[in-house]
Amino acid sequence: METRVLPFNDKAVAEAARLILAAEPVAVPTETVYGLAADATNAQAVARIYEAKGRPSFNPLIIHVPNLPTAERIGEFSAEARGVAEEHWPGPLTLVVPLREEADLASIVTAGLPTVGLRVPAHPAMQALLRAVGRPLAAPSANASGSISPTRAEHVLKSLGGRIPLIIDAGPTERGLESTIVAATGGPLRLLRPGPIQINAEAASNAKIEAPGQLQSHYAPSKPLRLNASTAEEDEFLIGFGPIAGEVTFSASGDLTEGAARLFDLLHQADASPKKSIAVAPVPDEGLGAAINDRLRRAAA
Ligand code: TXA
Ligand code: MG
Image (tube, rainbow, N blue to C red; front, side, top):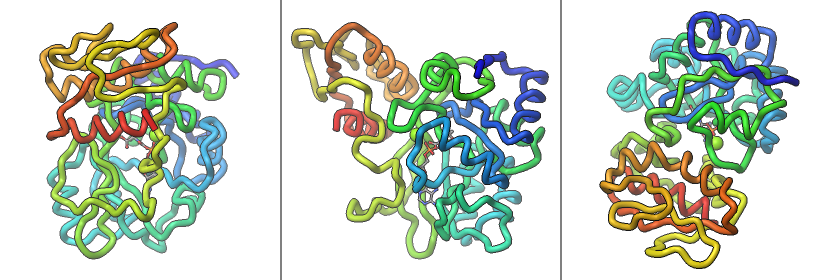
């Protein structure tokens, strides 16, 4: 299959909508990472996501919808969940809520769970696609399963080229880090995955893996990665931060927002370099740094 890359405009969105309604998955940018979107009401279409990604079929997918009222037709929102949604949507937050019985979703999309992960994305390309298709879109990150999340169209092409028909290219994503995932399924809110938005929620226990994003090896590059490095050892590609320069840097000024936006991009660069392994400078564990370190620890595992 030939993979076309079209710049984001009305024509590209119309073509993407046509493909999605024909049960093909299409890669589209969101404000976090590029997603691989398919019609969430069509099991065949969703299966093609799993197929293209080579993803284990027990992983549930995030459902993208244009607004909160649409989300409330699919999931049950407690007053607390609604409050958090109103504050942060559209934006990089996924809420896991009980699935409504009457919701018209293919069961493969929730991996048979009684809950559903819902998100209202802010990116104009994903918003335009949602409006053009008129159906909820299942969209995991647009990369082969277990590899680094894509923050540019080129990353998608490298990982899934030949396996999907179309990528909409709107340049690098703004946040560079997948959405914060919070479960609102009764009791206090629980943080399933740290991300760009900080929510006052209990840390989910590690005993039970609720979001496979919590799996240790989820973000693995193809070579060993060493954390908290101050200098590069022989045959290591060093990614710097703040005062530690490296061959490239998450942020020379030590800015965590810039660091998050560049995280996966630089891991891709390091992975593609001729060096045998990767080292990264220490990143402070505060604010967005906690989410960055979470991804780095998984990449190192
Ligand atoms: O920023 C993002 O969230 C991106 C963009 C494309 O929206 N999407 C993304 O999707 O990161 P994905 O599939 O790579 O990660 C979704 C995570 C997975 O770990 C999945 O298992 C979890 O969300 N998840 C989805 N539904 C769930 C549910 N009902 N219960 C627990 N975890 C769920
Ligand atoms: Mg992913």
